[in-house]
Image 1 (spheres, rainbow, N blue to C red):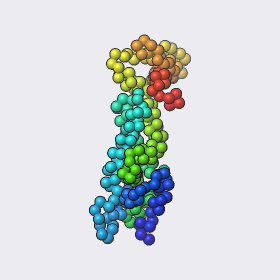
Image 2: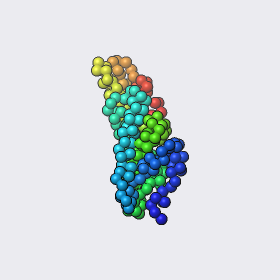
Image 3: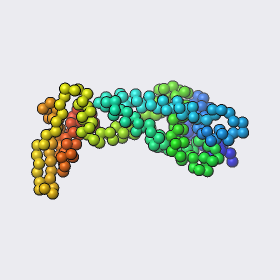
Image 4: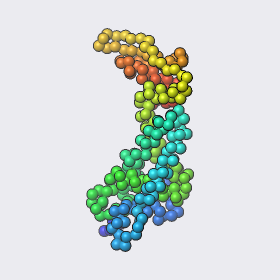
Length: 240
């Protein structure tokens, strides 16, 4: 049985993508790994998904950047960059491709097939970008966005929340956008025996109370106060 026969039919992938291609050939090209094209008897240059993967990387970046820029207006450039990096990394793209069962649609050379190339993270991540580029070329940026956002929104939210775990750092970055603002943490209560101390801190912005936090260490109490302040100004959701 040839390698091409081992790949699932493209119409099944179109159903998973929720997109029907006008140009079926471009979808097929997005799924051809270089190991497969290298084994063709009449080797034709560029008959693999590498150029599409190159384009897909940029399409992915602009869609993600546009979405987080508009959705997280409280984030500065540094946080936006970290959120995007978490979403467009190989590990994330591998997860997206796995959810689509993309590996079963790939055309791989014999060597990659026997070494479980259909499960290789780098191959699947590249293929996901190539498929995104194929949708972009076939249907335009709106179709690419319509395909991509439902898949990546949860990862974006997770990445955004992850950057907020250090609530003090996030609050400080937001406050620093207005240089004249003064942020201060004030210890208001310390109680309990030495082996079981509890602290209460207020976080003050220009003498205005922004949040109060409690914890078994001063750091935990300050973090809790910063979190309350971030909720107050709408920077994070209360469930974050």
